[in-house]
Image 1: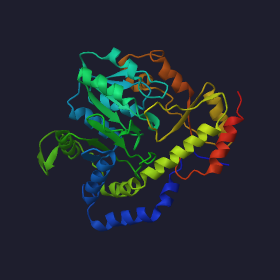
Image 2 (image 1 turned 120 degrees about the vertical axis):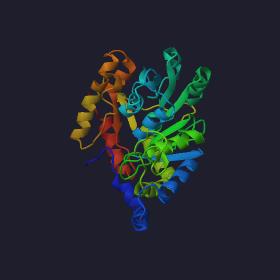
Image 3 (image 1 turned 45 degrees about the vertical axis):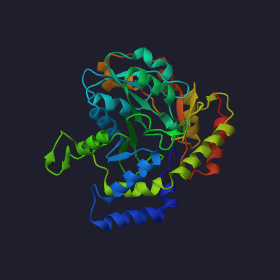
Image 4 (image 1 turned 90 degrees about the horizontal axis):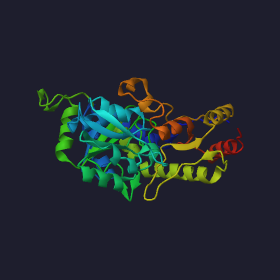
Length: 365
């Protein structure tokens, strides 16, 4: 049996008629950029998250970069960020000339809230929280720290569409909730796409100008902006998927629970979910000291897995100038050596999952 780590076409096939109808609606409309589909998606996604405003953008990375820029954070400023996140989170900081200050993760793979205050300085302007692998971070404690030190909160929600902490959805705690709609995400488009949600009208308006060359009215450029617009086709297709997102997330939760119950191999550490937090299991990530051996054995049995992420940002070649070295963040580095993402996707059959579980349980070093 051959099992890929992710399969995208099955969820398309589930709602094929709706997707095709939406695509034809856009093609026949004659309007392809910043039209009705984007407006409708922005309204629907804002309502889904519980925020007042949504600004559709070209990508999740642009959402991060533009959020930092809209808060006037730049050279000489520091932004706190977890050390084991994907490089895009850190790029959102460094693309604005600001300095990332790394904090180790906790046992749930998210930023360790107990270690944040010790790295706050007079240069700190914000905390960028990543809800990694689909699980909400410990937001009550993080928000208390931010309020105490008068810091902004930017949430990287690229992997947490619909996840909650104490019943409040990720992306609704800080001034900015940044979402990626890359095709592999739980709410994935059919190309690059992203968005920011916020309750701050002035912040939202600044992002709208920024995404469209810095203008509200064509050729009247009020700020130095960029071109980062969610297009009509992706917005229309996202509207279809958004209407089914809760059921899609529930399917992943079901698959995750089957992994939790079925995997009994003591060589693996299964993912933990903290009290009050919810995970929508964008990834199902286990830890194994002999990770590379496990991955090779699974591959030999036709099971594809992925490593999220093998090189932490502080050790990435592009960030050598920050002066970090191996050993600076030992928990992050141990995760990089041990984590493995198992196959989990919409339409995964129980037979496929049982095969993965079987091969994992018989694995020995």
